[in-house]
Image 1 (cartoon, rainbow, N blue to C red):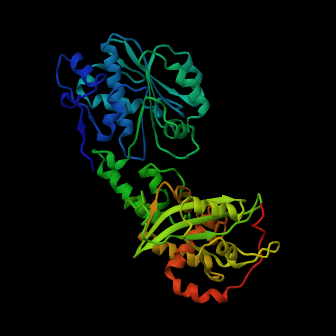
Image 2 (cartoon, rainbow, N blue to C red):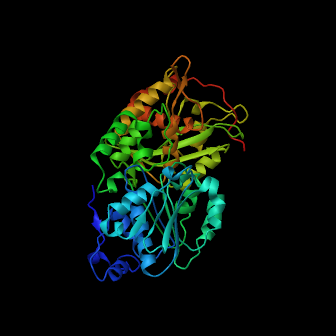
Length: 463
C-alpha cells in the first residue's frame, strides 16, 4: 500500500495553479492537501483534461471532489465568477449526484469548510462567486449548453457517457483556462469514454489508472469485501477491484486462474528466450465467411514455466495467411502443434494442414483425438497449469479476452451444465487447451500419432 502525499509547500514544484495559488491566497500559510501519490502528477501543471479510471476503493471520486472544491476556492479568490458542473450519466435526483461526495470532502477539510456555504440542495463559496451545479447527462444534456461561465466540468461515473454527449458538452466548457475532469470504472473497450480518453488520449490530458492498492486510506472493511470477491467471485473480481473491463461472465472456466495471474503480476511484458524453441498451438478454422476462426497460441516451455508470448486469430483466411503471420513475427522455426483434424485431407486439394505446413518448412506434431471427454480434459489441464503461466499482456490481449469469456453452457430449468459454450471465445480456448494437453502428455501425444482417425471438414486451402 502506498503512502499519502501531502501537497503542501514542500512539494509545490510546478504546481502554479493549485499549491502556489493556495499559498498566495492564504497569505503564505502552508495548506495541506492529501492525495494518493499517483494522482499528484495529474494535478500538477496546466491541462485541459484530468482524469482517473479504475476499480472500486481507489479513492478517485473523493480525491477529485476535494480538488474540485479547491478549484472553486482558487477561482473565487481570483475574483472570477461562474460555475463548476458535476455531472453523471444517470441522475434522477441530487441523491444520485456527486453532491454528497463533494460535501463530505469539504467538511473533512477545515480550511475549505470555512470557505463554503452548503445547504440541502446547493454548494457555493460564501462570497457567492462560484457555485456548483449537479446535472444528469442522459435527460438534461441540453441544459448544460445553456449555462454560461463554466470553469470546470467534472463527469464522474463516466463509463456510459455516449460519444454524442461528449461532442455536445465539451464545447460548452470554453472559459479561459477551463478544464474537463473525468473519472470512471471501465466496463467495455467499445465505450465512448474509453475510446476518447484512453485509446486516443487528447492533447494536454493527464489521466492515470487508479485502483485500491493506490489508495493509502483503503479501509479494512472494504479489504475484507475485496478478499471475499477474490475467493468467492473470481469471475468479477478483476473488473470490480482492478479496473479491468467487464469481460468475465458467470461460469467462466478460467476466471480464478486469470485473476490469480494478474494478482501475481504474471500478465505483463514477457520476452521470448532466443535460445529456446517456440511452439505454436492451433485450433483450425475454415475459409468461408461463416467458418470458425483459426486460433494460434505461441509459447515456450522453460522448465516448469510456460511463457505465452503471442496470440493470433483470423476468420475465413487461407492457410497462406496464417503462415505469413508466423513468418512475419519471427516464428518460422517454431514447432507447429495441431489438433487431430490437422491430418484431415481437404477433399478438393487432397492435402492436410499437417502436410501443407511440413511443405512450408515447419516441424509438425499432431495431438490425437482425446475422445468424448476431450473438452473436459483440456479445461482440467489448463486449470492445473495456469499457475505456471506467464502471458505477454500486449501480444496476447485478444486471446486473454477470449479465455476470460470461455464459459459453461447451462440448462437453467434443470440447473445442469451442458459443457463449454461454442461461441467466439471457444476457438482461442480450444487452442489453449491443446497446449496444456501437449505440455502434460508429450510422450502420449507422440505415441498416438498413428492412432488418429481423420474426420471430414470443409475446404481451407482456397480463398
